[in-house]
Length: 158
Image 1 (cartoon, rainbow, N blue to C red):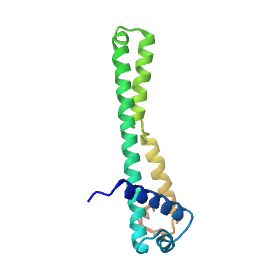
Image 2: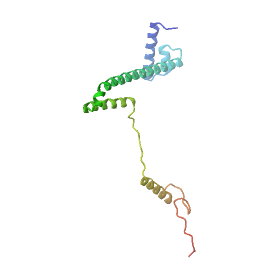
Image 3: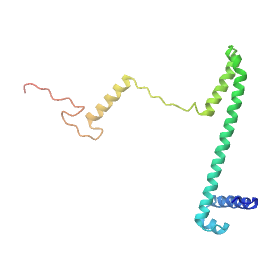
Image 4: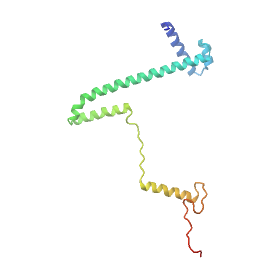
């Protein structure tokens, strides 16, 4: 059954008051008692629904705005593209700015961390680890024949 306009307005106003009270630190029981909910659980459910609806509506509004802005960039790019393709430096610069803006809006420019290891860096790391193992810096007892130790020389005892 669809609620009347008056009932919808009452519900919206009560939800807004409930949210304000919760933000101000009221418990769900206090909210229920003051605003006429049947109990603390009803107040909790109503506040959660209102917040979820707000988040969904905000998300939809942002997405619609993003789509509008992307469509505007498409129109601008279409207008400038022929001149850019002819080599017009100013048109190329403008086209690049449009492409850059689109990439930012779509999150295509998110940071990518690349770690390049050279053989020298790997060798230095191995030597550092071997040195730590040899001196017991890692708290591992070392004995002859373990990693990082040189085995005793074989031959006649002298």
